[in-house]
Amino acid sequence: MKNLFILGSPRKSGNSKNMARAVASGILQSTDNNVEYIYLNALNIRPCQGCGGCNKTGTCVINDDMQELYNKIDEAHRLFFVSPIYFYSVSAQLKTFIDRCQAQWAQKYLLHRTQTRTIIRSGYLLSCAATKGEKLFEGAELIIQCLCDTLDIHYGAPLLVKNVDKIHAVQNNMGIMADCVQFGTHLIKNQDSPTDKL
Image (cartoon, rainbow, N blue to C red):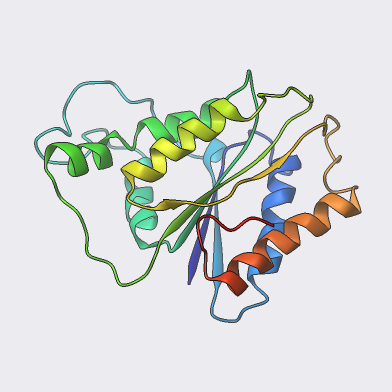
């Protein structure tokens, strides 16, 4: 199975990236799985222009690095949307990526194009934040739920970590790292039941 990690942090080795790598190590315990990381901050992805260019064709008219990601999104069995929390939302890098999925929204809701698939596809939010706010992840979850609906994939139980402020806070916390590995292992053992939680 293809596992695509969309990394939204501007840091190359930040806390959310380390969460993703630990989750991937759990997934890779099954030889039927492979993993690919997309580091958004290294790509040239322009914001959606709201031009309506995709409304009739379902294809984004902006010619940049996002064009290479559309096929990767369609081919992945599991998609992991990985981001720190900034102002109670996902990073600008990830939000730009999400907004450029307007073309997929047009395909589904304007052109009524859907793909028949033989396997359940799932999407997951992997996120961490420096503070402890009660509603800290609500904004990010709503965004990813909407994205998963647009992409016709099930929204699975998220992996959310609070109170990790320092750069290596996740990497240096063996308990968090173990939970991340278990999260990945849980997915391959439970066949991605969208409502399953650890």
